[in-house]
Length: 97
Image (cartoon, rainbow, N blue to C red):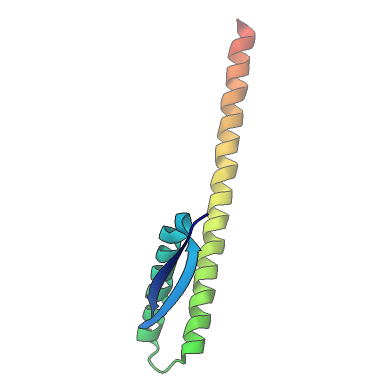
């Protein structure tokens, strides 16, 4: 795996990271999402310290992740249920022949 250096800007500060080349795009997207989240929090709470902004962003992003995982789990259950029903119908149709 080839390591590459990337540079990201979060709240007008530059940070450099090393990552695997295949993870570069997703890391850049994550940094962009973090920057937008932190900037929005900062704009809505001008007197909030950078530590609190960071904590609020982490909490908001964690909450988004948990909600997404819950939704995905719900869809997984629905898809599995639908596949099982279709499989049962297929087995019934094949048994009739």
